Image 1: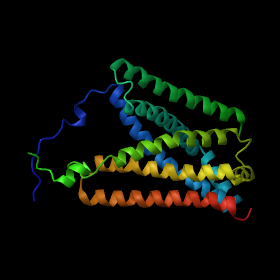
Image 2: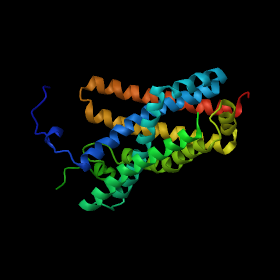
Image 3: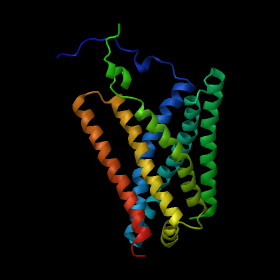
Image 4: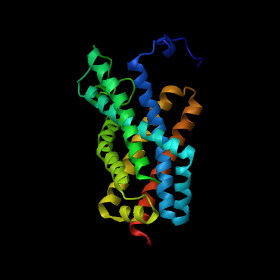
Length: 129
Length: 127
């Protein structure tokens, strides 16, 4: 059967970017990034089970510039997905739907994730290698 | 007069033939992951060092090993549920969609299984 021309919803490119839809797509992006983080976590665990040499190789990979960048990215992705996920759970429970509430909680979640990421990495940096 | 069959009305699944199971499973796993991920992150950050012997010793404690197994399992499940929705939303051709969904399921079972196996091996295997 040939596809029929059914009415479609307005294309996503039509909408103006604002805090609401930006944070929504960021939730998805950080979720996908964290799925890659899951693979990294499982690789790390396997290297730990495999022996000292495998673990040293994994640790070297994570301590490389690309590795550090990935870990910082994962830290932010995790904290953002966590805080915004809690925001979503409040919505699911029926709270926080008003426009000012949405905006305040949105900015709070974004700033909170950035601030906590900085805190974690200052902590790691001060602890030394 | 309703054209819906009595069975259809009782099941209440609508035209999507699917209920709220996926949505609900995503929320339940999300709630479970709040304490699990925080416990894991804080534990790693408060370990004196992330050296081979130290991390292995930590994962060998019954509580740490048990919670780490739960973490990897629930994490893989939640990640699978989330990435499936992304594929369903953005991949439109039937063949690519089925292949992507199959790949997602295999990768998540593989990664989750490997992570859990690694923890069990550290907990129960030779030192």
